[in-house]
Image 1 (tube, helix red, strand yellow):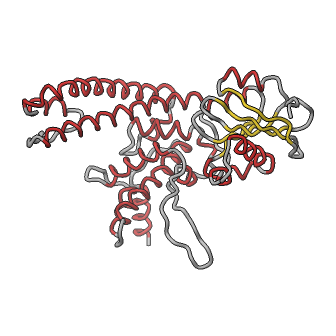
Image 2 (cartoon, one colour):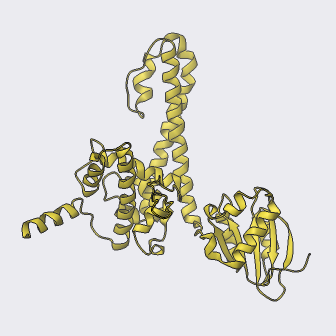
Image 3 (cartoon, helix red, strand yellow):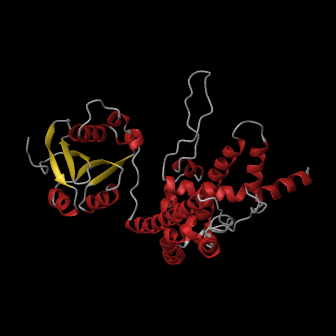
Length: 359
């Protein structure tokens, strides 16, 4: 079946995206197959395949290539639906899985009801650039941690120990304490650490500039103690358009910090969070939450809320409190962004005190 995609009538396209090739499956409004085949996963090949064709609904699964592919196909005049992978159990659990079958299922689901796919809004080119900067810094930081742990492990295995030190100052404070027999082995690693420290510093300055110049909302969310330039830029670039959330509370669910639910009849167990959304942003918010609840966190409504949860009896109370504070933090950041208000750390506590005095 090799009919033209540009024939009259609405066309629905399922695009199963692969790293080199993507499978195309096309039906008409009645669900009859119009075309199927493969196209290279490159801008040039997609443009050649879809440019100048009548407007179609193209459905693809969210993944590595979906941001640039969705932008390109939208520019060519097509309706693009990026499906949430969590809604595609029909594909992932299929015991006859293939590229062709996946493309067909995407196509037919998109023809029946787009809402079933819980479409994801693709990131803009600007957001992708900010994300690339943040993730590159994250890789450098994790590489530095791996090197430090490796050096400490080598020294410990030789019967010695390196002095305690902050991560940035590790090289300066510990290199002279390395046993002589290991000096030649670890010397190249200390050179790598110096280079990585320099790279992280460069990334930090670039992130600061990016937030100030391209994402002014970062200054608003950084009012909250524990939210630095990295977390602020990651959050703002992830949300990108705060108005797409009808309620600030929805941001916590969007970032996967809402508890799962498996209610049936009288049974409604307490489950773990969904962990949907961007794991990188969620991890940064968790780190901010840990600072807020830690020994150096200032007295705020968020801290008091977390302390109340921590004080409750039960296994894992501290862990649940950290997640709950992170969820509230996401809601707070979105609210500050939307309203542009000045952050009041003890706003709820002040209001509660005023009500008690009035009573």
